[in-house]
Length: 408
Image (cartoon, rainbow, N blue to C red; front, side, top):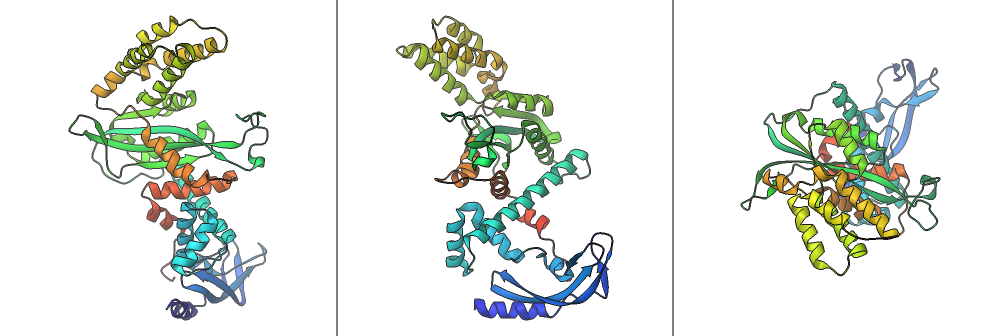
């Protein structure tokens, strides 16, 4: 049945060989001249299909083109639009060798692992470029996000980072945590935006179903901030009664929040703050569980001044003293972001579990498997595919990438 379908598709495509007159626009402001018909083979979900189409050559550009290829959305590609989408889906979910086997087993399509890799990464790169163009247009005001006009009680912007193992060339000259001081990974900055309009029966905040959208890039904090802000605009930042930024306490996150979300409520993830207390207790006061419990209670109440006083009373020397100074500075600098009793009274989330889960599922499960080493371009391409799917925009982004004309 698949072979029969391929034959029928080949016959259907042969009905229009793409002749569009003696001359056509080459796309570069010149006219390309018809020189004849040329054959090519295209892999489709129905198997290999032969395609004979009119070929034009532009003497000014020195390049050739086939209008039929552009109409079918396969210019410069060896896979049909439908097969490229299928390959992108499996390539985003599993290692390329396994994706190749699953395509053969489940769809009867035989491709090499390298072709799966190249096609999936090419699709991801186009999705990433289209998303960046959308962000630029949103920030410039040349497009307006359409959607619900209903006000949103809270729009959350949760931010975190995670490392991706890369090939040596991507970390050359970078400092890292390895014993030799070299970096082995590049940081992926991850943002998750979601809304909250209510509480559960116990008075705890509830994320609105299906409201999460994600972005993840290997970019500078400045560039990431622009992209996060553009996504917030797309999600209806102006309709939100309150914007909330949640992070783990990293300085770059709060610099980003101050610049792009100056009126937002800033909250340090409670569980990261607790980890800092556990760490200092292990170093400076390991045998006094009561001391740690008292400090955790102060933290939960947002009584940071009392917590700082208790830290100041600890006696320490050497490396322990240095660690204690760092933790003290952490709590002092973030005290207003740790008023957890107040945040709970407002009905806000106080944890960054959503974006941390995004780091694990979007990045870790696919890109951090044993033996994997990525180029930055390849990593961002696959992450872009995974973010589009996790954000519920898979169909939307493929309409951006594969426009086909009425003729097609």
